[in-house]
Image (cartoon, rainbow, N blue to C red; front, side, top):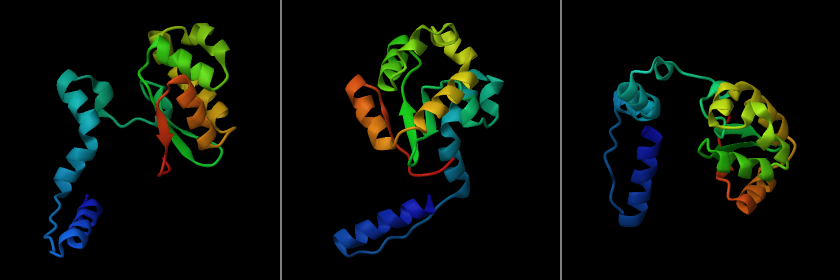
Length: 149
């Protein structure tokens, strides 16, 4: 958050010639970064959201990050049958849409670890640019990653 504040201050200085005072709260920064899980935990009291989880055990395997051939990428899709069908078409694995382990949203959640392992094997075969072109053709959402997990 401090780095972001500094970037904004430098941008403002370039635009206006005026300096800025940058103040960052460690607690505020942590709350901002924890917001997605914290809000879900406070709203549901579901203990699943009280702990940090690996990307290999996320609730929705269609909303995750994966290592492509050249760098990391993100998939950002709801766990719906339509989104999963589009993803299967984009990765050239239409057979997965009929796979009993992944036939509906509940099955994909129950078998998420196996699905993530399978997607890990698929995505590493091509560079991010190719995957994103395929995503665009099928209406899938995703993007390149800038950080490693």
